[in-house]
Image 1 (cartoon, rainbow, N blue to C red):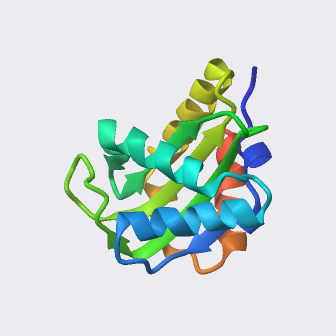
Image 2: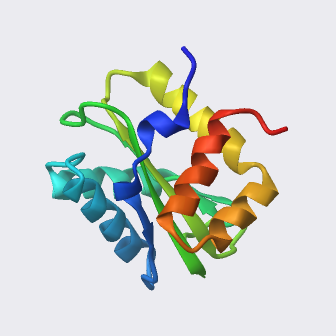
Length: 155
């Protein structure tokens, strides 16, 4: 099963945020996911995300956080992207501000696909140049293009 990140992205789910806290940022990501028809139960979704983050921070370091959840009521996997130019405290493993937030959500009964999407995204953002370009971009179109290209190996 080949994963193409572009299949799970949408221009409608890319935002530039200036929120001051992790929770405010999560609220923004949830709101644009809801507005795009991906989340119905906003409170349940937020609760599941925060519960997952309480187990271990989804701030993986390098300025990146990957909050993620699988739950009933989510029909298909999706990724919502938040770009925070100033950076927000995410309780990251390296104690540095987070600039790129990739919210991943999907159905609770598709563990293999979930892990493949997470692995593909993690591989894509390991590239420091890609992280720098994403953090430096000024439009959601630029961000989308950078991420769609991640579906193909780096040259």
